[in-house]
Every structure is written in structure tokens, then in C-alpha cells.
Length: 140
Image (cartoon, rainbow, N blue to C red; front, side, top):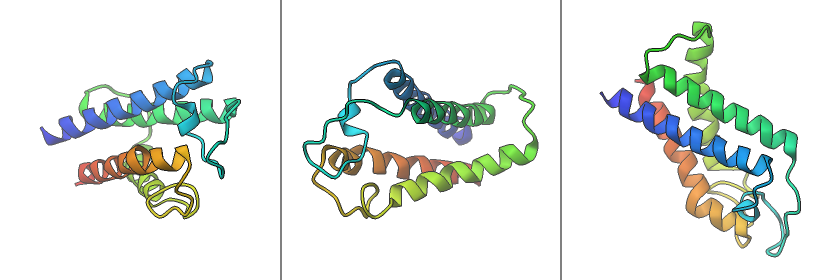
């Protein structure tokens, strides 16, 4: 039962995150000033890197599908090794993201006075930590 609940939560988190990326990819601007790291407090984001945004959106959809497989009895033709590796890889990268790069992002960042860094402290890093913890719980 706990597997179904936690997998469902992760599935919906990843779908929501992918939706935001698709929204930005197709011209949406809401929240865009808070999601790209910058050195300056008043940095204006004119455009986003379209290819990277698309790639991140697809990766997030893949992560969502991995957790959909965990709680919904559907069969994809992913090799078993891919699935097992993904269940380790996903929490690991989100733990690394929560820790951060020690400059712009994560709990141990140095630049703390920009729109991104404030959003990162309140939303992004804690969300990454939660994703990581839920993913690690599902391993056992």
C-alpha cells in the first residue's frame, strides 16, 4: 500500500514538473524569472534554452513513467536493468541537486540574494530532497 501511495506522489510530482517545462517551452513566462540561476538580483530572463528545456521535460516524463510502472500494472518493454538502475539513479540525482553545486543551487549555495536562490531555498531544494527520500524509501 505504501508503495502505491509514494509512487503515485512521485508520478504526479514528475508530471507537474514536466508540465511546467512544456509550458515554458511553448512560450509561457510565469515563474520563469525564478527558475534560472543568475549572479545578479535584477537579472532579466529574456529567453530559455529551448532544447535543454525540451530535454528536461522528456526526462521528467520518463521519471514519471518509471514510477507509474511501480504502482500501475502496465507492461513496458524496458529491460529489467534499466528499471532497477532508474530507481537508484532518480533519487541519487535529486539528492545531489538538493546538496547543490555550492555556488548557485542547493542547500549549500553561496549566492543567496537572487530570485532564483530564494525560490531554490524555499521550494526547489526541499522538493529535490523530498523526491530523493521518497525514491529511496521505495527501494526497500
